[in-house]
Length: 267
Ligand code: ASP
Image 1 (cartoon, rainbow, N blue to C red):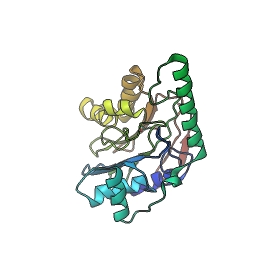
Image 2 (cartoon, rainbow, N blue to C red):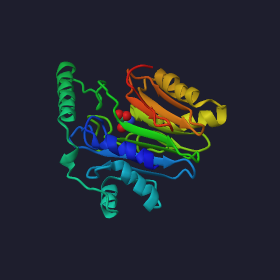
Image 3 (cartoon, rainbow, N blue to C red):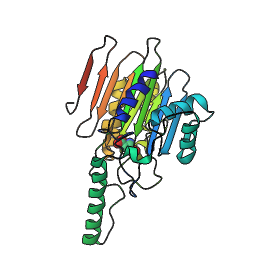
Image 4 (cartoon, protein in one colour):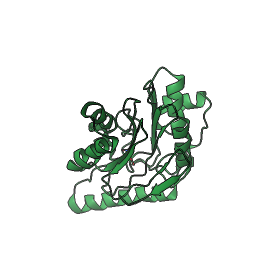
């Protein structure tokens, strides 16, 4: 859990990723952040959705897991809870990056142009997608798994929209009996296909390996319905998969001897 939270905090603080600072904007120009975390020993989990002032939503998700009787807090309740337990609070403007603001303006312009041309509105989310939600999975020396995911969601999303990232079983899942999973991609598909849990279920009930299970969901089930995205999955024996049906996936891993590997587009 410590490793997952620490890795995700670094990525949240880095404006290059769509999580924490540098998150994408809603249609009406705000940042609403989602995150979740889960551990595999007792299947404890915590999540926040639609937070607006919490600097590190992954830490708020962990606080929900460790300090409340609940799994998911949303909106104002989640923001107030985070402040009450002493997490770092920021002005909403902290999350703004010029790159993401421009991305929203481009999408709004494309929508306006399409409307003028065809007299019909485009869907709320433009097809020009880029998945940069962040996530991490880890295993400790005792064989305990953990997974976490953090995101600003999808650019130009409707006010109040919640994606898969804070939904346990969709964007995040961990169970020591199978694997830890974190997902990125078109959240509505990941919710409908229960992607993170489906990967674990294929291992549990069909005896698939981590790679087979991740590939079955990402490369077969989701591919068939054009549900774009990716998952990272790690099992109790340290086997892992990083499966994606998108053009690329910025990913990396570190083994117990400290060797780290980073991959971008190569399959
Ligand atoms: N899965 C995220 C969401 O739908 C977006 C992403 O992965 O970039 O909110």
